[in-house]
Length: 80
View 1 (cartoon, rainbow, N blue to C red):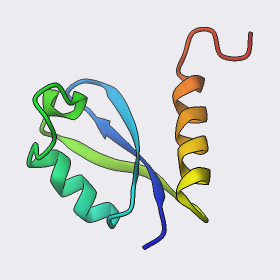
View 2: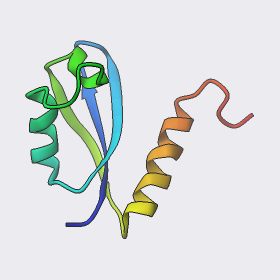
View 3: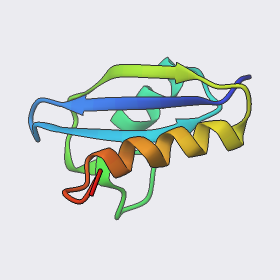
View 4: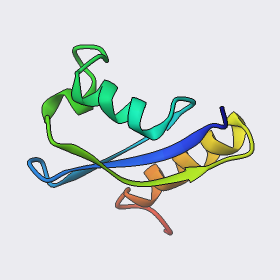
């Protein structure tokens, strides 16, 4: 399966979460909603995550670069 960059949104937190996956978008969202990731994982803070957007990539390296770029855009210092 092709790597995908995905963005989830929680209305409860009014926040986005960005990650990379090799699962289908539905499977990954289900894992977040079922809190299958560690105790300190950010998505455990809410139970209303929805898939906001996803980007199919050629390989994992490209997906990781896109993920990091999106995360940098949320930074207060982006573009300075």
